[in-house]
Image (cartoon, rainbow over all chains, first blue to last red; front, side):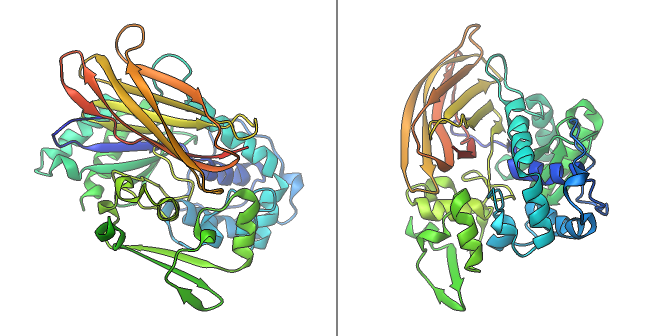
Length: 202
Length: 199
């Protein structure tokens, strides 16, 4: 919320199902995905080993990397790649058949998992549970604004992932991807937030 | 509105033929129709001259355009769709605190629960009003409902959950409104959004 009639910074957090479906697939099928700056650590939640469901992990892994880049970094804006979450056939991934078939093999479990991730941040009672505490976000915004940046230009969206450790990346200007536990490492979280706000005005 | 809409150049190419109109198929697909969209090898591009200048206020009265650009990642203070196509801004922080919106799918025939809240930080909440707007992006239905905002026990925040019939499909929602703090200051709810596949 922002005070009426004045300038304010803004930071929006989202908990998306599709990235968690992709990470679940990677982890439960033990896909040999090459690491890279955009590829997060393993999921923080315990997931089963379903690697016996799919016989072509190398083929699926190659497709997974392309899919992931499209999901998190808008590397490809075509509907075929980005509009997934279309069970049970996952036809949106027809251009990546090995990946599509792998997703189909664990689709039910992946969808249940992604629902569980969202439920974890819903609060039926008590205070809200954003990954990044308001005070920490405010301090980071004010730090960046102290360099002369107008408050209204500080506008960040954050994709929260349930992955291990205090992981974060700026995937495009104004877009931060981070682990749900990032705030537990306060110094790292502040660094990430300041970088995200700065990127939003770059 | 027209000026803002002019920022959007929507190209819809199917079989090499481009059309300027936005076809219904360009709206975010339901689980059962997304495959058909992909099989027709359609390419949808949303070109936004300056995405940060396009807000949901500009788009909200055209569900098709809102849906398309939401899906393609228009961000900023409005539709706020991150990458991934199923965009959301579940918690939105600003200098007056945090507001939040979640759509909860209960697998009960198109009756999701909209869970919303407002948590001002500098001062306690007194009262206000909010409106939740929802669009069924798959089937085209849209509506809104108003909520009275009153501080919960302890006076520090407001939280509310309410079930509505939206039909099944991909449902997008956002919340607007204003609240007054006990010290008399007024804060605007910063348009939290959510999208969920409702069954």
